[in-house]
Each structure stands twice: as structure tokens, then as C-alpha cells.
Image 1 (cartoon, one colour):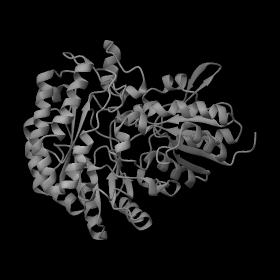
Image 2: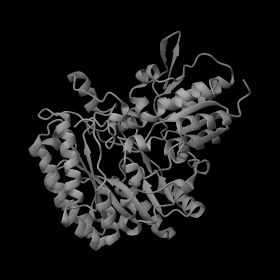
Image 3: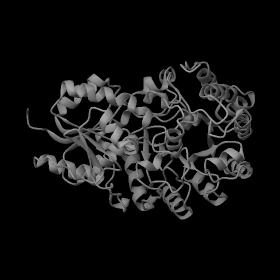
Image 4: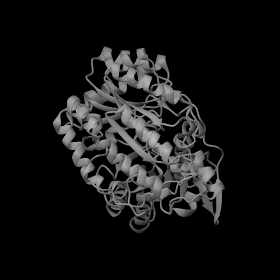
Length: 489
């Protein structure tokens, strides 16, 4: 074995074709710069370790090509990161992980293999037993991975490291509880320079104002974590707790300046699990963006019960043109059951306020929550069409590992997907939860019906045409001409 060339390479797996089927060729989805590999790479580089990042998705690499590239890099550790930036993005990405590790065993057997991210954090022991890896990192990984590299470089064989799982004589060894990085202002800028920034593209809807100009595309984070406990969400499995930590607006604007000046980025996603939450934080950052004179097109996540008119006006002035609201359901009984914490009666008031300030809405809805029946799902579709958001994500409910729904499904014996691809909303294997009243195939059929009903609705198409032009309306009509093939029905 030759001496290693670098200490660690972080890999983002690529599974677009598997996960999105025919829609992947339509380029409906975004290809996002991966925050966690870049953030960890920046941190470890600052600590004096040698590091690189390989985005197999952006570079359209097969598992074999990925393994060959890693062999050429010859790292001490190859770390596959399966964290996304929303609850659905991690588990379904496991589809490409096993293949990468299998190829690594063949092409570079001497390289230590580590897996980390939201899904492994939710199921560390199962991941260690099922995947061909040496280590599972639970949690954010800053301290865990730095300690692991140091031990390996010193030739150590025991790894009593917070958040680390490994096998020793076929026994699972687990370190102490992962350590959370409290003062995230201390973290260096993510190592965007290690990524192919010219390859990233925004969501189609994010650029309806100029749909041919989805590139270049950048992401930023202004906080980590979420203080809420929605039962369908798994995002806090990565952090080990609910709660939120903020970067200072001054810290964030420096990164925005750098992205604009270095890569000419205008289209930006704020990755925060919940951005529109703290009035002072949002206001101060928006003021700085305006002061720095950037002409940006930004989108961010919001909740109905955390925004107000002053906040909305400030965001619009700063170039936050899109807010993604988690409406989830049009039925109060369903909302209360999943601990959403919002009042269905107030939704339209906030929608009207958002439109009044000139922002566009990306409306998120879920069909097949535990108490859903056909009537309540129709309530949800009715609300979606009444809101008539410029874009709508219409999901079927999934029991993602790390969520309360997953825990309840295990206890109650509710059928779960047999493959990780089954957690993907658009895959052939898509396998949503059954509800108390409906089979999972009923939920999926209704979701797919609702998708076409929404996007083929003349009222919606007329609105899109009036706001964005006929080319965007034609783009949407082309999108709905692609049939999603399902195994379940």
C-alpha cells in the first residue's frame, strides 16, 4: 500500500436518475452545492488536515468512476455524506451509497470508509451492519472526524470518539454522545473552492423570472437546527436535539459577498431548516444585503406562524423573492395530529400578506399523514388550489428514519419501503405510508392525481402566464406530460 496523499475526501453520492426517474432528464430539480461536505472540509482544512470534496452527482459519475477517482486521490478516509437540506433528501440518497462502497472495496480496499449524514445519524447501528463501511459518524461530525483522523494517523486501533460507531470482533462499539458545535460563527467558510461550482443549477421554479438562467447557483446557511418537533420531520436527527444556532448577519454577508464576487452567483437558496423565524436575525441580514447592493434571487423556508408584514417587506427588498411554506394539510384535524402548530384558518391571511408584499410562494403539502382519509386529502388539494402558489410541492407522507412517524410505524408494524429508493417521491419504488383509513397505494394514486390537477388547472396556468410569460406556462405543461411510472399501482 502506498502512503496516503490526503487525509480525507468527502463524497456526495449521485442518484438523480434512480430517484427522479424520467423527471431527471427534464431537469426539473436543482443540483445543489453540498453544504455538509463543504462545511466539514473547510473546518478540517483550518485544523491543518489535507482534504478534498468529490461531488459524484454534479460530475455525473457512476459508482465505478467515483471509486476510481477516490483511488487516484488515495485518501486515508473516504467519507460519503448523505445529508440533504430537507427531511426527504438523505434516506433516499442511500440508493447510491452502497454501490460506491462496494466499488471502493474492489478499487481501493486500503482506504478507510466512513458514512455520515442525516440517515446514518438516525440509524447508526443498522447502517454500520448493512453498509460496507469501517465507521459510521453520528451527528455533525466536526469533532468526531478530526479526532478519528488524528487517531488513524498515529496508528491507533481503538476509537473512543464521540459520535463514532465501528465494529471490533463483530461487536458494535459506540463512542459517547456526539458533540454539537455551539458557536457556529467560529466555523470557517465552507470550502466551495473544492467543488465544481460551474455545474450547479437552481430549481426550475426558483428562476421562473428567467428560466434560462438557472446557473450559476449557490447556497448559504444562516442557522443550524430547528426548534420545532413536527412528527413527520427527521431533520433534527442530525443534531441530536431540537433547537437552533445562528450565525451573525455580518458573518453571513461576508460569504454572500464572496460567492457573488468569486462565482457571479445571483440565484441563492438559504438552507436553514427555518429561516423566517427570528425577526431581528432576518431583519439585520436583509438590511446588510440591501446595503451591499446585490441583485439577488433568493428563496428560503418559512412558517405561517412566524412571519409578519414587516419581515415580508424586508425580505422582498433584499431579493428574497420566494418563500417555501410548509402548509402540509388543508384539514385542522390532520395538522393537530402531526404537531404542526399552525391554525388552518390563518393560512389564507398569511398567503394574502405574502402576495401583497410581492413574494412568490412555494407551497408544500403532504398527502397520507396518519389521520388522512380521502376527504381530508381533498381538503388539502382544495387549499392548494385556493392558495394557487406559483409552485407547489405535493408529497406523499413517508416515515423517514429519525422522525416520530418512523418510530410509530416500527411500533405499530406499519409497512415501510423495502428499499431506500422507496423513500423517493418520484421513484418507481415509491412506497408511502398507509394511513389509519387508506392503503399506501391509495395515497400515492391521490398524490399523483393531485399533482396533475394542480399543474393542469387553467387558473394556475393563467396566473403563471400573466406573471412569467407563455414560455414558463409551456415549460409546466411539458413537465406534466411526463408520466411517473409506479410499482405500487
